[in-house]
Length: 236
Image 1 (cartoon, rainbow, N blue to C red):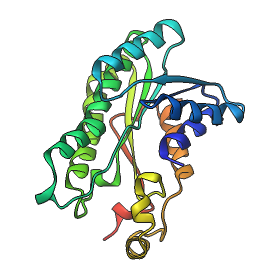
Image 2: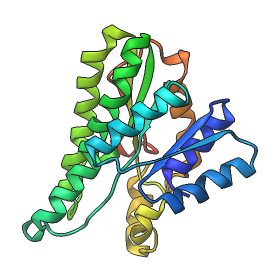
Image 3: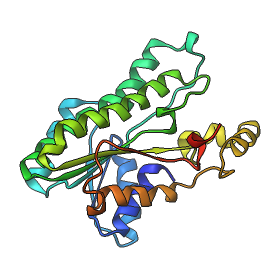
Image 4: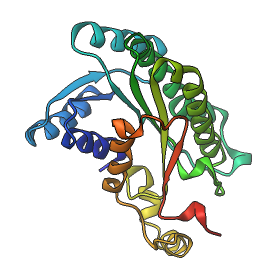
């Protein structure tokens, strides 16, 4: 299970009506149906988060025809691994658009409606790589550092309108995005030694942070990045 599915389920369990997004309509429908089978109320909103015009049209239509979006989780993301000196410019541009531009496009489109209502919660998904780097993922590190700082910028501009904008920075979690690393015994051995908790994270362990940032309990938390990483950023 990926982070997006886990957070959608966690918010639904906390009582939210969930709107799931993706650019692949058939995969999106399967994800929505799985949640619906568990008894949760789910809306599907297919669009490409990297297409600014498509984002604005979809968000505006949903707000107009369905209901307000009170909580936004910006979770679109991708990874591409290569030595920095060999990193293709096309891969760099695609990674930055997916990981950074999407946060701006969707965040701005939703915030415009939240601002009119005087309240709203935006949660961006950053990464342990917002603070740390490893060989072969320099552009990914740059993108997640940008998400952390864009979160600060959003909070600085929008807090006066009643919005709270924060980020969650997962450490190393067993997700499809990390499948190559999860299946690498050498990397797993390194990670278990490097992480004080001594293991990979489980996506369900991100839910508590998300529910906290989505709730009134975080009404005076703004521009913060909450690391959920088993202590990896706290130790050498």
